[in-house]
Image (cartoon, rainbow over all chains, first blue to last red; front, side, top):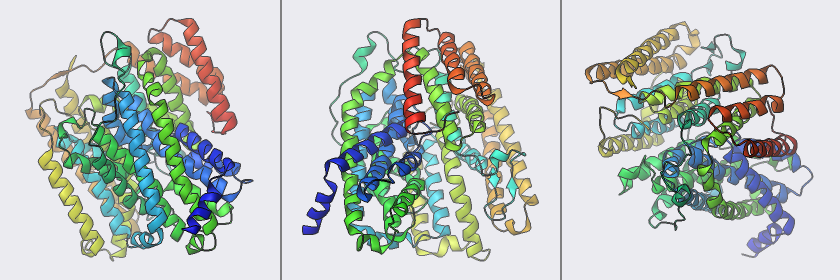
Length: 495
Length: 143
């Protein structure tokens, strides 16, 4: 207890609190902009922390990480443009609410859910970090393949009314993810001589194209995002936080933390799985796809739950859970803090205040979110003739910033057209992007698993963790199939 | 308004073809990939071809409905055209500001906005704050 107060006194100084605020604000801003991810936010901050005290520098980077994960939901809700891939599931429910003039409550739920997700995961990190790190070590290539398959199984839920098209969309995504270098032989595949494709197609350019630009193409011609007649300002309702969102938040927070511990799994998978699990359990299944606050709560608490979870293997084993925590690892090493057991003993005076700073960062973005939600919601009332050019400009900047490549901007435009037409013909863009994101994880896990099993696929069915994952996937698939909403099959299309 | 069926059939046929191409292309992968990644590629190709074939049959048996392919053709092609021109200008190293200002104004005009003062104030403010915050302060690379 005495130690806890000592760590708190190290953390709670004015300069440290300012650093956390700055980091969180910056992260939120970067996360809200399509293409500028948490990884970039942390990476940008590293040089600025060189001269800072280790606690201050790390707290600033931690704040930026937490803020960016929350910030991704802002553009997802307001413009169906996920600021980060992890916010994709949020856009499926948030944007329909914006169209109904309920952006304010969607943003509010997103901020509260992100807060709880981040807080639960930071608490787990604080208390159970060393124990949970060994759980992650049980995950080998076969388990990663099966985890990706589990993520892909959630495609079934997108297949609203047209299961085949939903699955086909997922396979199109998987096929696009094959572009680049073969992870086993190192040979080039489907690059058509383009040097830019040697490392594969970064999924952010297609994601921005299909969700941001394609959305702008759909919006062109409408007056504002809010679909209404009469007094438009009256439809931006100020609503109280609805009851009954506790369960989805708990579910999302725990799933996010658990999945976050697994290196490489990431916030996108966790958000999708929590979203799907919530849909299965919800009493308001009919609301999903049309603006479900439960869906937002589950997805957002889950992707913020990943922040603390991904730091567990990083701090205890030196294995970054995702690219953002990898950037954070760079920051730790620069400060002379080598991840491992010593962080919790010799360097406890830095590590524990850093973990505690995540709680403060969560409070900061919660306040930012709650205070700015009504103001941000007004974006949906801006005339589309002013909004569309600005969104297109930010999409170009964001896409370019990922790899400093105008080739990616071209890819974005091509995918915008592709996304627009596929959407019109009933294909699921959500499933396509999920396939694109999970494809490399699935391929690598599959190939390495086969090699590990000496050419036999039995390795995927014999390990205890694999069996658990297979059972969970079957449960998810069967329950999705049984609880799929009944829609008009003639016109039914995937989300 | 156009009939949905011909487009659906064409897309399904294209994906059947693409799936077959992906499946057969795995044969040309190096020897050491044949027992690992080539298997995965074949699985993806086959899955795509089979699903697209099923979709083709379903679409064929379904009665056609009409869909609105474009809400407004001028806006759609105009916006795509302006985005392409914007990208070309950036490729030609004309400069971010010089390329962006005409893009913003032209797109706004295309979409029917005519309040010049609002346009000027909004775009200049957004451009300058983007430049200062992202490019100068955060050193995010700009095209």
